[in-house]
Length: 114
Image (cartoon, rainbow, N blue to C red; front, side):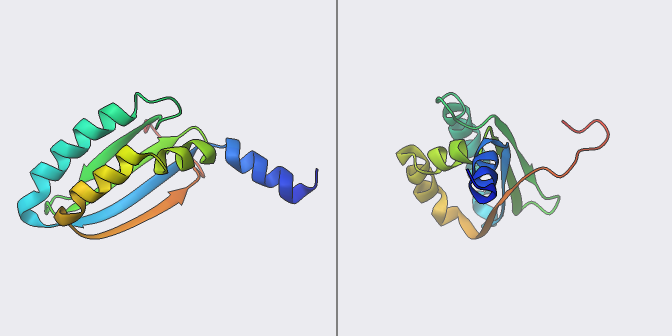
């Protein structure tokens, strides 16, 4: 096994975090949050689903940051391919002005943040 293949396998086994910053239409913020609360509760129960997550709402009220953590890149990829996620995205699309998702690995944590 060469180092490139090993790096790829190690990356697949390392926890990953999806961080998505969204700008919502003001009249749909509460509905978006309620729908995501219900959906994330259900998707977290599936095998290899997200380990957990957080949803932050800006003080101004229309910007949302959705943070979801997965056991591995493979688990995140599996969830991204689930039909119920595709349906949720389509359901919420009319509420969203813009979305900027990205995948991250943790570099470090400090203080009491969990």
